[in-house]
Amino acid sequence: MPAVPFDFPLGIALWSSELRANRGRFVEGYNYSRLENSGDSFRFTAMAGAGRIAELLRSFAACLPEESFLILEFYQEEPEGETKDNPSPVVYYSPYLLTEEILAFLEPYLPRLIHDGFVGFGLANNREGMELFYSEEKVLTCFTSNQIQIMNMLARSGLAHTPDLVFPTDFGHDHLSLLCHPAHQLPEPFASMAEQDLDYVQFCQELTDQLEMYPVEENLAFFLSKKEQDQIGARLCHHPEFAEFAEEDFGSLLLDWNDFVDECTTGFQGDLWEYRQGLKLRDVIQFAAEGVVAELGRKLLEIVAEADERFRTNLIDCRKRLDPPGDIPVREERFWYQGMVRNQGAELRRDLIRHGWYRP
Image 1 (cartoon, one colour):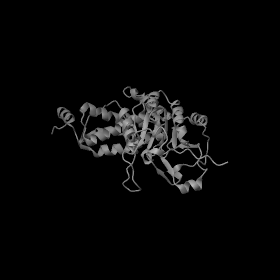
Image 2 (cartoon, one colour):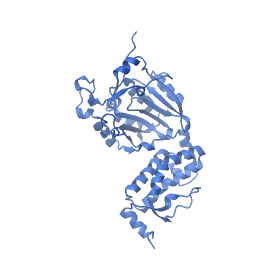
Image 3 (cartoon, helix red, strand yellow):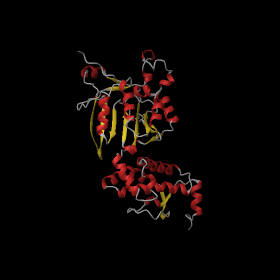
Image 4 (cartoon, helix red, strand yellow):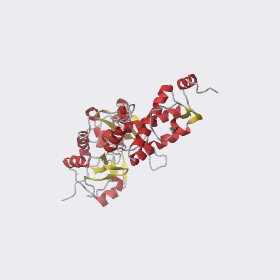
């Protein structure tokens, strides 16, 4: 009996020579392994036909808490050929929203997200240490600390554990946008769509605008498991001012510190109180890093190391310092209070003058 062709999405086209040589090797299934730098979490990697992806997304959403956020990755201009100047995809996160609301909003976009070869998307809740992502390579990746739950979910969807699974990335292939296909050859629902609705830049931009998504730098890709988040939360409860962050996603706070550093680099437009609120983010990170197990503490400081270095190089007048809060018991010298950022907006400079920063 001949092998049934794998249900590839329209956005992945294996080279004819690869298909002939490897016909029958592409099957649905998954494998998994422990996640590096997170001993209690696992990475699942799965191949599933395009027709199963919507079902798998909904099944995973049922495993999430009430709220989650959408991840969207796409090229803001289409790559052309194999050149050094090829653009990189941009990753966007939505704010935390009700998971059911995200699914309802995605419904009319799902076929395009699944099939376009320049788009990846997924759902995550960092506080629970769970993420599912369907990449532009059209491979599913899941991060979780509850591997039994995900195994059961995949099994219910018809995917079996397959250690020798192969992926499109193992073979020569091309990525195609929906606009690459002749309109008359497209199946529904694409055949009846206008050209602009098939343009991934257009429909991805609609998603980012309507869900108020924000770009996330590629070098800030990190994963904190639920156990790690719980350890951090327990540590923050030991300080009355920081306890308010204990139930929040600590990953969002790490991203907020990076955003603050970015703002200071381009020109801080807030006042002195707002500037101090930015420095407080780094206080919280240091307090957490020094009070959890050493491995996790190193991991947190490694995540912010690049932003820290950019902030250091942006500081001037380093013989002076702002008065830091005195009731935060940390061992390390808080360099972020030493000196002042170069690019001060009018409000910050005004407040610094009023507080005597520029006295001889």
